[in-house]
Image (cartoon, rainbow, N blue to C red; front, side, top):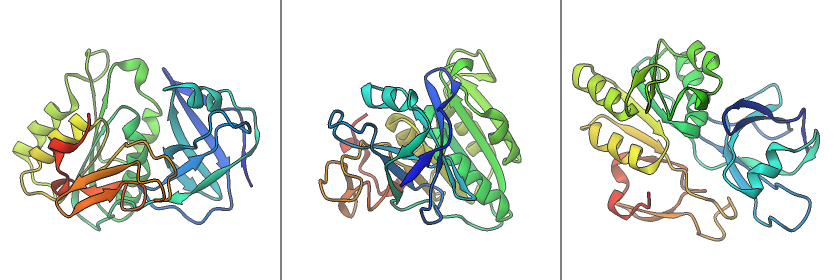
Length: 250
């Protein structure tokens, strides 16, 4: 059994950091854990969360309050916690290239783990962090520490550059060459990033709701050029060019 080390820490508006001591196998950037949110039967289904970091036996995950299950987790007291993971397929960590990471909202969480791995592999990392406004930006210092260039955009201009993170990405891609692009966030944002890539390899991490997390229920199926794929076991990371975006719910 894993253990929640301390009460979830509020890191921004509606976002909390979980610190979980676990004997789980080492994680790869882009993988996730599935958490049983209550010892009762309601809510029944587990909730999936991207791994923010995993080192020395401690998994960090950022959760966003989106309903009763996540509210229960945010109020959880330290002690035993039932998790499955690490699960799913993660990002490809290339070596020594120029990479662009584009995150939106809570979708920034798995990109922190990835950014650290890419930096350690000798990549030049440009990170675009998109948020609704200043109060929704979490753990900014940790993101800055593992990027050569870190750029914040907010919808309302309360921090960084005003506007959509995809606008900033478009400007960068038009003027610079990247060996790889990685993105996670709302589906419309990732759809736009896949179009902007223009032949540059791009990996996306989908934020579908995973019912079981281990491929049994097929409730997270998405359509790709190679046919239907279960996001929890075939993903959550996919080649952005393979996604049939017109069939992807927003």
